[in-house]
Image 1: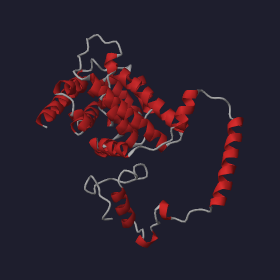
Image 2: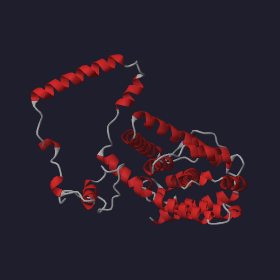
Image 3: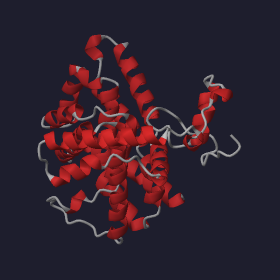
Length: 325
């Protein structure tokens, strides 16, 4: 215990998905759960080494079986083979970065807001559930929680003030929309027809198909969603799609692209670690499709005044917080 140190003062949240992030907090949790110190196994190097002869026979059988298996496998594209062989876990730096990103956005507070909202609505008479006022307030509270995606991210804080402002104004509507839809999915808000009826009234009829497509792509754990939100926060897709307004020029696009590369590689490695290869590909594909659906919803709601005003207000508050920091 004395040799292990926690970089976050012993406040790491350890679960099955991130147990490699901090050895100190993992050991503390194990001990608190009843693990006996005398039952701790020695390190791999100290264990009894297998007999060399037995190891040689085993390796020979393994090589033979591997060769036969390769002969029976159908030929595949080289790119797929490269991706399939990349089963390595994240590096220590990537685990640390993943932990930092995970702590940027407190999804659980958003979930608690959503659960409280659902409880309040379900306690109302059926005919007055999910009306315009409560839904507008709920969306506003969820968007307000999204500020921490930017104010707590050290990579975002390392950018110039102008670049932060450009990314914030260009992308907050996307990250906010994704946050709101993810919370809505987790609290089963999309299972309520009355919600969609009101959504159509307060936004735009064409928003409903996009909202339903988003809902189909959100079956992720919270860590993956936080990673996707972090990637989206540095997205430069505005420069690759047609818009009526000309884009503002980022002063250090190279730095932003570098952050994108780091985040995307980390996301892929985490998906491969979290799932098998096929499931990782499906999940990554769903993330991309989810973004397109979010972008469609954002375009459809450009003229929705209450939503535009809410987003502008939150963006202004976020900029003020960033300036103070």
